[in-house]
Amino acid sequence: MAFSGDGRYLARGASATGSTPDLLLQPADPADTSAPLEFAFEGSLDGDRVAPRGMEWSADGSRLFAVTTNAAGNQFWLHIIQPPAVQYDTRFTGGLTHSPGTAVAGEPLAVRGKLELDGPAPAEPVKVTATRTDASGTHELGTATVKQDGTFTVLDEPGLVGEATYTVSYLGDLTHRPATDVTHTVTVGKAPTSIALTAPEEASMSGGIEITGTFAAQGRALAERAVLKVVREDRLGTGTLSSVTVAADGTFTINDVPRTRREVTYTVSWPGDDLHEGSPSGLRP
Image (cartoon, rainbow, N blue to C red; front, side, top):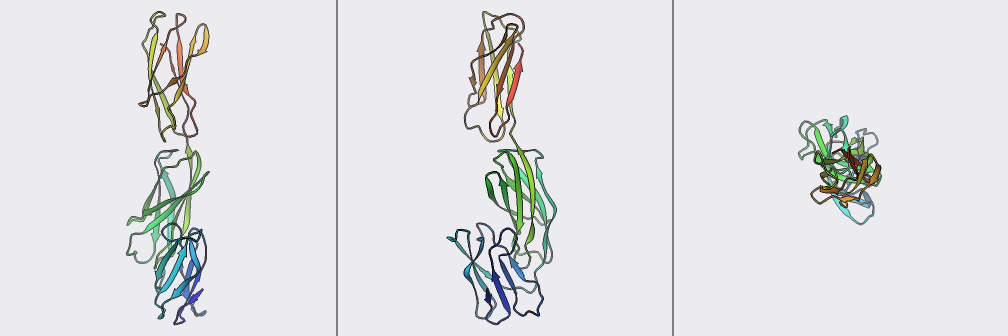
């Protein structure tokens, strides 16, 4: 806590998360019921909390010097604050939406929303901060600029399959209070894959058959080249042929000598991985 030198204001520092204020600046006179000036510090640009013994007023009470620190206590930020006469409310309206509608691991995702501010427009561009919480923890996504109509877009590329919860915050400024955080949960699925095959309409037992194909995977690049399973089915039964490794450009070739006449069906498949769906493809030359 710190009182201004002229006795007009009282500053109270704390440690809070999200849009909950870390610093309250209010009239020292208990009879003055003016709403306190609120500041929420969160993230790499502001620190996370007011440092112990981190507040001091100027001699004339016109400015408050507040030092904030990160959670570890090894970084510090200086904020110079002038107490204004009025602070206005802010709010997120309409919730958050995302596009595309089906979120896929390793592909871009846009989270959109709208922020309303009462009172005069701030002199500096308004920015909101965003985080994504998934199975691996909470990740800071940085800031997004709010347009003149109040809309904003947070861009992300989720990296895990499962639920991802996006939290957007507005921490306020000298004339605007922080807004209550808004959240939105997205179900992130595996990226689709596909296999396309091409083969001649007819083949001979003496000349054999050559099948060419293309393997494609959306989302994040595979850690290793895909290895495809090849199964041949004819009137004598079903058997697994040698696996085929996909080339860097996604192409592959299968060579086989049919063991019997009549219809032969080749099925090529990939089982998928943690971020990609499997893909089968059948061909009947």
